[in-house]
Length: 399
Ligand code: T4K
Image 1 (spheres, rainbow, N blue to C red):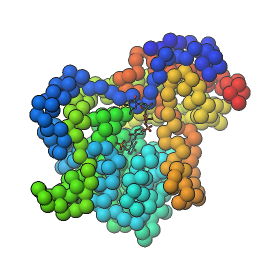
Image 2: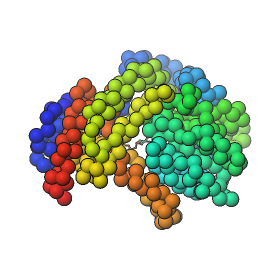
Image 3: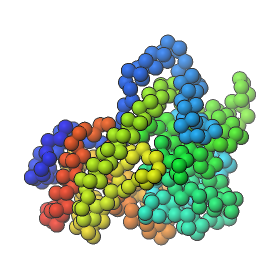
Protein backbone atom coordinates (compact mmCIF):
# COMPACT_ATOMS: atom_id res chain seq x y z
CA UNK A 1 0.00 0.00 0.00
CA UNK A 2 2.47 2.59 -1.16
CA UNK A 3 1.38 6.18 -0.78
CA UNK A 4 4.33 8.16 -1.97
CA UNK A 5 6.26 7.64 -5.15
CA UNK A 6 7.94 11.03 -5.09
CA UNK A 7 9.50 11.86 -1.78
CA UNK A 8 8.80 15.43 -0.68
CA UNK A 9 9.48 15.24 3.02
CA UNK A 10 10.74 12.24 4.93
CA UNK A 11 8.58 10.86 7.70
CA UNK A 12 11.46 11.16 10.12
CA UNK A 13 11.22 14.95 9.63
CA UNK A 14 7.46 15.10 9.96
CA UNK A 15 6.24 13.94 6.52
CA UNK A 16 3.68 11.15 6.28
CA UNK A 17 5.19 7.65 6.12
CA UNK A 18 5.43 6.05 2.70
CA UNK A 19 3.57 2.98 3.95
CA UNK A 20 0.53 2.93 6.21
CA UNK A 21 1.40 -0.55 7.47
CA UNK A 22 4.91 -1.80 8.25
CA UNK A 23 6.66 -3.65 5.48
CA UNK A 24 8.74 -6.36 7.16
CA UNK A 25 11.88 -8.21 6.23
CA UNK A 26 10.89 -11.80 6.89
CA UNK A 27 7.14 -11.50 6.48
CA UNK A 28 6.04 -15.12 5.97
CA UNK A 29 4.98 -16.31 2.54
CA UNK A 30 1.79 -18.30 2.39
CA UNK A 31 1.64 -21.30 0.11
CA UNK A 32 -1.70 -22.53 -1.20
CA UNK A 33 -4.05 -21.72 1.70
CA UNK A 34 -6.77 -24.17 0.59
CA UNK A 35 -4.29 -27.01 0.21
CA UNK A 36 -2.88 -26.26 3.64
CA UNK A 37 -6.33 -26.22 5.24
CA UNK A 38 -7.18 -29.55 3.58
CA UNK A 39 -4.07 -31.01 5.15
CA UNK A 40 -5.02 -29.57 8.54
CA UNK A 41 -8.34 -31.39 8.24
CA UNK A 42 -6.49 -34.60 7.38
CA UNK A 43 -4.37 -34.20 10.51
CA UNK A 44 -7.43 -33.69 12.68
CA UNK A 45 -9.25 -36.61 11.09
CA UNK A 46 -6.26 -38.89 11.54
CA UNK A 47 -5.55 -37.74 15.08
CA UNK A 48 -1.90 -38.24 14.37
CA UNK A 49 -0.27 -34.97 15.38
CA UNK A 50 3.43 -35.68 15.77
CA UNK A 51 6.03 -38.49 16.20
CA UNK A 52 6.99 -39.16 12.59
CA UNK A 53 3.51 -38.81 11.12
CA UNK A 54 2.63 -39.29 7.45
CA UNK A 55 3.08 -35.61 6.49
CA UNK A 56 6.51 -35.49 8.09
CA UNK A 57 7.48 -38.60 6.17
CA UNK A 58 6.17 -37.15 2.93
CA UNK A 59 7.92 -33.85 3.59
CA UNK A 60 11.24 -35.61 4.25
CA UNK A 61 10.89 -37.64 1.07
CA UNK A 62 10.13 -34.56 -1.03
CA UNK A 63 12.98 -32.59 0.51
CA UNK A 64 15.43 -35.41 -0.14
CA UNK A 65 14.26 -35.56 -3.77
CA UNK A 66 14.54 -31.81 -4.16
CA UNK A 67 18.01 -31.52 -2.69
CA UNK A 68 19.31 -34.81 -4.07
CA UNK A 69 20.54 -35.79 -0.59
CA UNK A 70 20.35 -39.45 0.38
CA UNK A 71 18.73 -38.73 3.74
CA UNK A 72 16.56 -35.95 5.07
CA UNK A 73 15.51 -35.70 8.70
CA UNK A 74 12.86 -33.12 9.54
CA UNK A 75 13.31 -31.35 12.86
CA UNK A 76 11.43 -28.83 15.01
CA UNK A 77 13.76 -25.95 14.07
CA UNK A 78 17.21 -25.42 12.60
CA UNK A 79 18.80 -24.56 15.93
CA UNK A 80 17.97 -28.00 17.29
CA UNK A 81 18.98 -29.39 13.88
CA UNK A 82 22.42 -27.81 14.28
CA UNK A 83 22.74 -29.08 17.85
CA UNK A 84 21.81 -32.62 16.82
CA UNK A 85 24.20 -32.65 13.88
CA UNK A 86 27.09 -31.21 15.89
CA UNK A 87 26.55 -33.86 18.54
CA UNK A 88 26.01 -36.73 16.13
CA UNK A 89 29.22 -35.81 14.31
CA UNK A 90 31.10 -35.99 17.61
CA UNK A 91 32.37 -32.41 17.48
CA UNK A 92 34.19 -31.35 20.66
CA UNK A 93 36.63 -28.71 21.88
CA UNK A 94 36.67 -25.91 19.31
CA UNK A 95 34.71 -25.50 16.10
CA UNK A 96 35.39 -22.79 13.54
CA UNK A 97 32.38 -20.69 12.55
CA UNK A 98 31.78 -17.29 11.06
CA UNK A 99 30.74 -14.50 13.40
CA UNK A 100 28.76 -12.98 10.53
CA UNK A 101 25.73 -15.24 11.02
CA UNK A 102 22.58 -15.47 13.10
CA UNK A 103 23.55 -16.18 16.70
CA UNK A 104 21.93 -19.65 16.58
CA UNK A 105 24.98 -21.00 14.73
CA UNK A 106 27.26 -20.10 17.63
CA UNK A 107 24.73 -20.98 20.34
CA UNK A 108 24.30 -24.50 18.95
CA UNK A 109 27.96 -25.11 19.82
CA UNK A 110 28.16 -23.21 23.09
CA UNK A 111 25.00 -24.95 24.33
CA UNK A 112 26.97 -28.21 24.20
CA UNK A 113 30.12 -26.88 25.84
CA UNK A 114 31.96 -26.48 22.53
CA UNK A 115 33.82 -23.21 21.90
CA UNK A 116 32.83 -21.42 18.72
CA UNK A 117 36.02 -19.98 17.25
CA UNK A 118 35.03 -17.02 15.13
CA UNK A 119 36.64 -16.73 11.76
CA UNK A 120 36.55 -13.86 9.29
CA UNK A 121 34.58 -13.83 6.06
CA UNK A 122 35.42 -12.96 2.49
CA UNK A 123 33.98 -9.46 1.94
CA UNK A 124 32.91 -10.40 -1.60
CA UNK A 125 30.86 -13.43 -0.60
CA UNK A 126 30.07 -12.70 3.10
CA UNK A 127 30.96 -16.36 3.72
CA UNK A 128 33.84 -18.01 5.62
CA UNK A 129 37.20 -17.19 4.10
CA UNK A 130 38.96 -20.58 3.85
CA UNK A 131 42.41 -19.04 4.15
CA UNK A 132 41.41 -17.41 7.44
CA UNK A 133 39.97 -20.78 8.54
CA UNK A 134 43.45 -22.28 8.23
CA UNK A 135 44.79 -19.65 10.62
CA UNK A 136 42.22 -20.49 13.28
CA UNK A 137 42.85 -24.26 13.48
CA UNK A 138 44.39 -25.41 16.77
CA UNK A 139 44.98 -28.87 18.27
CA UNK A 140 41.53 -28.54 19.91
CA UNK A 141 39.69 -27.93 16.62
CA UNK A 142 37.27 -30.72 15.75
CA UNK A 143 35.26 -29.17 12.94
CA UNK A 144 34.16 -26.35 10.72
CA UNK A 145 30.64 -25.01 10.25
CA UNK A 146 30.22 -22.94 7.10
CA UNK A 147 27.10 -20.82 6.74
CA UNK A 148 25.67 -20.25 3.25
CA UNK A 149 24.77 -16.67 4.14
CA UNK A 150 21.89 -15.20 2.06
CA UNK A 151 21.70 -18.57 0.26
CA UNK A 152 24.97 -17.89 -1.53
CA UNK A 153 27.12 -21.03 -1.24
CA UNK A 154 30.29 -21.13 0.84
CA UNK A 155 33.64 -21.94 -0.78
CA UNK A 156 32.57 -25.56 -0.44
CA UNK A 157 35.42 -27.14 -2.40
CA UNK A 158 38.22 -25.41 -0.52
CA UNK A 159 36.57 -25.99 2.86
CA UNK A 160 36.15 -29.68 2.01
CA UNK A 161 39.81 -29.87 1.05
CA UNK A 162 40.89 -28.23 4.33
CA UNK A 163 38.60 -30.42 6.44
CA UNK A 164 39.91 -33.59 4.77
CA UNK A 165 43.56 -32.57 5.06
CA UNK A 166 43.19 -31.69 8.75
CA UNK A 167 40.85 -34.53 9.73
CA UNK A 168 38.02 -32.17 10.66
CA UNK A 169 34.27 -32.59 10.45
CA UNK A 170 32.58 -30.20 8.06
CA UNK A 171 28.94 -29.22 8.15
CA UNK A 172 26.95 -26.35 6.73
CA UNK A 173 24.33 -24.12 8.25
CA UNK A 174 22.09 -23.91 5.22
CA UNK A 175 19.32 -22.01 7.04
CA UNK A 176 19.10 -19.49 4.17
CA UNK A 177 19.89 -21.81 1.32
CA UNK A 178 16.95 -24.03 0.48
CA UNK A 179 16.50 -24.21 -3.32
CA UNK A 180 20.00 -22.84 -3.97
CA UNK A 181 22.73 -24.62 -5.89
CA UNK A 182 26.50 -24.73 -6.02
CA UNK A 183 28.15 -25.74 -9.28
CA UNK A 184 24.85 -27.10 -10.49
CA UNK A 185 24.31 -29.30 -7.43
CA UNK A 186 21.65 -28.43 -4.88
CA UNK A 187 22.70 -27.30 -1.44
CA UNK A 188 21.94 -30.18 0.92
CA UNK A 189 24.55 -32.62 -0.28
CA UNK A 190 27.76 -30.92 0.83
CA UNK A 191 30.03 -31.62 3.78
CA UNK A 192 29.13 -34.29 6.32
CA UNK A 193 25.67 -32.77 6.68
CA UNK A 194 23.68 -29.59 6.05
CA UNK A 195 20.95 -27.99 8.12
CA UNK A 196 18.04 -25.99 6.67
CA UNK A 197 15.67 -23.67 8.51
CA UNK A 198 11.99 -23.52 7.69
CA UNK A 199 11.24 -20.81 10.22
CA UNK A 200 8.29 -18.56 9.35
CA UNK A 201 10.66 -15.89 8.03
CA UNK A 202 12.52 -18.27 5.75
CA UNK A 203 12.08 -18.94 2.04
CA UNK A 204 10.47 -22.34 2.66
CA UNK A 205 8.30 -22.06 5.72
CA UNK A 206 6.77 -24.62 8.06
CA UNK A 207 5.91 -22.09 10.85
CA UNK A 208 8.86 -23.45 12.83
CA UNK A 209 10.97 -26.25 11.44
CA UNK A 210 14.13 -27.40 9.81
CA UNK A 211 15.78 -30.37 8.18
CA UNK A 212 19.12 -32.11 8.22
CA UNK A 213 20.37 -33.62 5.00
CA UNK A 214 23.27 -36.01 4.61
CA UNK A 215 24.57 -38.77 2.37
CA UNK A 216 25.98 -40.64 5.36
CA UNK A 217 23.73 -43.60 6.31
CA UNK A 218 25.18 -44.06 9.76
CA UNK A 219 25.03 -40.37 10.64
CA UNK A 220 21.42 -40.19 9.46
CA UNK A 221 20.44 -43.17 11.61
CA UNK A 222 22.13 -41.62 14.66
CA UNK A 223 20.41 -38.26 14.17
CA UNK A 224 17.03 -39.97 13.77
CA UNK A 225 17.47 -41.71 17.10
CA UNK A 226 18.80 -38.62 18.83
CA UNK A 227 15.91 -36.44 17.72
CA UNK A 228 13.50 -38.90 19.33
CA UNK A 229 15.06 -39.07 22.84
CA UNK A 230 17.42 -41.86 21.72
CA UNK A 231 14.59 -44.39 21.41
CA UNK A 232 15.34 -47.41 19.29
CA UNK A 233 11.94 -49.10 19.31
CA UNK A 234 9.59 -49.24 22.28
CA UNK A 235 11.22 -49.01 25.72
CA UNK A 236 14.77 -49.14 24.40
CA UNK A 237 16.90 -46.02 24.71
CA UNK A 238 20.42 -46.28 23.32
CA UNK A 239 21.66 -42.65 23.29
CA UNK A 240 21.17 -39.40 25.10
CA UNK A 241 18.56 -37.81 22.91
CA UNK A 242 16.32 -34.82 22.80
CA UNK A 243 12.97 -33.87 21.38
CA UNK A 244 13.75 -32.57 17.91
CA UNK A 245 10.60 -33.80 16.20
CA UNK A 246 8.65 -31.81 13.67
CA UNK A 247 4.88 -31.84 14.27
CA UNK A 248 2.43 -32.72 11.49
CA UNK A 249 1.05 -29.18 11.28
CA UNK A 250 4.52 -27.90 10.39
CA UNK A 251 5.00 -30.58 7.76
CA UNK A 252 1.58 -29.67 6.30
CA UNK A 253 2.69 -26.05 5.99
CA UNK A 254 6.07 -27.14 4.65
CA UNK A 255 4.47 -29.29 1.95
CA UNK A 256 2.12 -26.48 0.90
CA UNK A 257 5.05 -24.09 0.87
CA UNK A 258 7.09 -26.54 -1.22
CA UNK A 259 4.31 -26.74 -3.80
CA UNK A 260 4.44 -22.98 -4.31
CA UNK A 261 8.20 -22.81 -4.51
CA UNK A 262 8.65 -21.88 -8.15
CA UNK A 263 6.12 -19.05 -7.96
CA UNK A 264 7.84 -17.70 -4.90
CA UNK A 265 11.26 -17.79 -6.53
CA UNK A 266 9.79 -15.86 -9.46
CA UNK A 267 8.35 -13.18 -7.12
CA UNK A 268 11.60 -12.86 -5.18
CA UNK A 269 13.67 -12.70 -8.33
CA UNK A 270 11.42 -10.04 -9.86
CA UNK A 271 11.64 -7.87 -6.75
CA UNK A 272 15.35 -8.40 -6.55
CA UNK A 273 15.76 -7.19 -10.12
CA UNK A 274 13.56 -4.14 -9.41
CA UNK A 275 15.67 -3.28 -6.37
CA UNK A 276 18.85 -3.58 -8.42
CA UNK A 277 17.44 -1.31 -11.10
CA UNK A 278 15.87 1.11 -8.63
CA UNK A 279 19.01 1.52 -6.55
CA UNK A 280 21.44 1.56 -9.46
CA UNK A 281 23.68 4.58 -9.61
CA UNK A 282 23.10 5.76 -6.03
CA UNK A 283 26.70 6.35 -4.94
CA UNK A 284 27.86 4.03 -2.18
CA UNK A 285 24.91 1.60 -2.44
CA UNK A 286 25.46 -1.90 -3.80
CA UNK A 287 22.81 -4.61 -4.03
CA UNK A 288 24.30 -8.06 -3.55
CA UNK A 289 23.88 -10.25 -6.63
CA UNK A 290 23.14 -13.92 -7.01
CA UNK A 291 25.13 -15.98 -9.49
CA UNK A 292 22.88 -16.25 -12.57
CA UNK A 293 24.48 -19.59 -13.43
CA UNK A 294 23.20 -21.12 -10.17
CA UNK A 295 19.76 -21.74 -8.69
CA UNK A 296 18.85 -19.29 -5.97
CA UNK A 297 15.78 -18.50 -3.88
CA UNK A 298 16.55 -14.75 -4.11
CA UNK A 299 15.08 -14.41 -0.64
CA UNK A 300 17.39 -11.73 0.69
CA UNK A 301 17.76 -8.27 -0.72
CA UNK A 302 21.06 -7.24 0.80
CA UNK A 303 22.35 -3.72 0.36
CA UNK A 304 25.85 -2.67 1.30
CA UNK A 305 26.25 0.97 2.14
CA UNK A 306 29.62 2.64 1.85
CA UNK A 307 29.15 5.74 4.02
CA UNK A 308 32.34 7.28 2.67
CA UNK A 309 30.71 7.47 -0.77
CA UNK A 310 27.15 8.40 0.14
CA UNK A 311 27.73 10.53 3.24
CA UNK A 312 24.97 8.73 5.12
CA UNK A 313 25.80 5.63 7.11
CA UNK A 314 23.79 2.42 7.23
CA UNK A 315 22.26 3.14 10.61
CA UNK A 316 20.88 6.48 9.49
CA UNK A 317 19.48 4.85 6.33
CA UNK A 318 17.74 2.30 8.54
CA UNK A 319 16.34 5.03 10.81
CA UNK A 320 14.93 6.90 7.83
CA UNK A 321 13.40 3.73 6.36
CA UNK A 322 11.86 2.66 9.67
CA UNK A 323 10.13 6.02 9.97
CA UNK A 324 8.66 5.32 6.51
CA UNK A 325 7.41 1.95 7.85
CA UNK A 326 10.00 0.03 5.86
CA UNK A 327 11.45 -2.26 8.52
CA UNK A 328 14.88 -2.80 6.99
CA UNK A 329 17.09 -5.06 9.15
CA UNK A 330 20.75 -4.91 10.09
CA UNK A 331 21.44 -8.64 9.80
CA UNK A 332 23.89 -9.70 11.31
CA UNK A 333 24.74 -6.72 13.45
CA UNK A 334 26.81 -6.61 15.67
CA UNK A 335 28.21 -10.08 14.83
CA UNK A 336 28.15 -13.05 17.22
CA UNK A 337 31.55 -12.15 18.69
CA UNK A 338 30.03 -8.92 20.02
CA UNK A 339 27.15 -10.72 21.76
CA UNK A 340 27.13 -12.54 25.08
CA UNK A 341 28.62 -14.82 26.17
CA UNK A 342 31.11 -14.60 23.31
CA UNK A 343 32.03 -10.97 23.92
CA UNK A 344 33.05 -11.75 27.52
CA UNK A 345 34.68 -15.07 26.65
CA UNK A 346 37.00 -13.43 24.12
CA UNK A 347 36.98 -9.65 24.33
CA UNK A 348 39.72 -9.46 21.66
CA UNK A 349 37.96 -11.61 19.04
CA UNK A 350 37.55 -8.58 16.76
CA UNK A 351 41.26 -8.61 15.95
CA UNK A 352 40.63 -11.72 13.82
CA UNK A 353 37.51 -10.26 12.23
CA UNK A 354 38.24 -7.02 10.38
CA UNK A 355 35.98 -7.85 7.41
CA UNK A 356 33.16 -9.01 9.68
CA UNK A 357 33.35 -5.79 11.69
CA UNK A 358 33.24 -3.73 8.52
CA UNK A 359 30.30 -5.69 7.07
CA UNK A 360 28.33 -5.42 10.30
CA UNK A 361 28.28 -1.64 9.90
CA UNK A 362 27.43 -1.67 6.19
CA UNK A 363 24.78 -4.27 5.52
CA UNK A 364 21.03 -3.78 5.51
CA UNK A 365 18.35 -6.14 4.21
CA UNK A 366 15.15 -4.95 2.57
CA UNK A 367 11.66 -6.52 2.38
CA UNK A 368 11.04 -9.22 -0.19
CA UNK A 369 8.50 -11.95 -0.87
CA UNK A 370 4.79 -12.08 -1.53
CA UNK A 371 3.86 -9.47 1.09
CA UNK A 372 5.67 -6.85 -0.97
CA UNK A 373 3.09 -5.41 -3.33
CA UNK A 374 3.41 -4.02 -6.83
CA UNK A 375 5.02 -0.60 -6.65
CA UNK A 376 6.37 -1.10 -3.12
CA UNK A 377 9.89 -1.76 -4.31
CA UNK A 378 9.80 1.40 -6.44
CA UNK A 379 8.68 3.42 -3.44
CA UNK A 380 11.42 1.99 -1.24
CA UNK A 381 13.98 2.73 -3.93
CA UNK A 382 12.69 6.27 -4.32
CA UNK A 383 13.21 6.86 -0.59
CA UNK A 384 16.73 5.45 -0.80
CA UNK A 385 17.47 7.60 -3.86
CA UNK A 386 16.16 10.69 -2.12
CA UNK A 387 18.44 9.86 0.83
CA UNK A 388 21.38 9.40 -1.51
CA UNK A 389 20.74 12.70 -3.26
CA UNK A 390 20.21 14.63 -0.02
CA UNK A 391 22.59 12.69 2.17
CA UNK A 392 24.57 15.58 3.64
CA UNK A 393 21.53 17.62 4.62
CA UNK A 394 19.76 14.54 6.05
CA UNK A 395 22.83 13.69 8.08
CA UNK A 396 23.05 17.25 9.35
CA UNK A 397 19.38 17.24 10.37
CA UNK A 398 19.53 13.80 11.96
CA UNK A 399 22.64 14.62 13.93
N1 T4K B 1 21.27 -20.17 11.16
C1 T4K B 1 21.02 -19.05 10.49
C2 T4K B 1 22.04 -18.52 9.55
C3 T4K B 1 19.80 -18.36 10.66
O1 T4K B 1 19.55 -17.22 10.00
C4 T4K B 1 18.85 -18.89 11.56
C5 T4K B 1 17.59 -18.21 11.79
C6 T4K B 1 19.15 -20.10 12.22
C7 T4K B 1 20.38 -20.71 11.99
C8 T4K B 1 18.19 -20.74 13.17
O2 T4K B 1 17.04 -21.17 12.52
P1 T4K B 1 15.70 -21.52 13.38
O3 T4K B 1 16.11 -22.23 14.64
O4 T4K B 1 15.00 -20.20 13.64
O5 T4K B 1 14.92 -22.42 12.45
C9 T4K B 1 14.71 -14.13 12.58
C10 T4K B 1 14.24 -15.55 12.72
O6 T4K B 1 13.55 -15.76 13.94
C11 T4K B 1 15.36 -16.56 12.62
O7 T4K B 1 14.76 -17.80 12.32
C12 T4K B 1 16.30 -16.19 11.47
N2 T4K B 1 17.43 -17.04 11.39
C13 T4K B 1 16.77 -14.77 11.63
C14 T4K B 1 17.69 -14.35 10.52
O8 T4K B 1 15.67 -13.91 11.61
P2 T4K B 1 14.65 -12.20 14.29
O9 T4K B 1 14.99 -12.11 15.72
O10 T4K B 1 15.20 -11.19 13.37
O11 T4K B 1 13.06 -12.36 14.10
P3 T4K B 1 11.90 -11.31 14.24
O12 T4K B 1 10.96 -11.81 15.26
O13 T4K B 1 12.47 -9.93 14.42
O14 T4K B 1 11.17 -11.42 12.84
C15 T4K B 1 11.70 -10.87 11.66
C16 T4K B 1 10.62 -10.08 10.94
O15 T4K B 1 9.66 -10.94 10.41
C17 T4K B 1 9.89 -9.07 11.81
O16 T4K B 1 9.95 -7.81 11.19
C18 T4K B 1 8.46 -9.55 11.88
C19 T4K B 1 8.32 -10.52 10.73
N3 T4K B 1 7.53 -11.69 11.10
C20 T4K B 1 8.10 -12.65 11.89
C21 T4K B 1 7.37 -13.75 12.25
C22 T4K B 1 8.00 -14.80 13.12
C23 T4K B 1 6.23 -11.79 10.67
O17 T4K B 1 5.74 -10.89 9.98
N4 T4K B 1 5.50 -12.91 11.00
C24 T4K B 1 6.04 -13.90 11.77
O18 T4K B 1 5.35 -14.90 12.04
O19 T4K B 1 15.12 -13.64 13.83
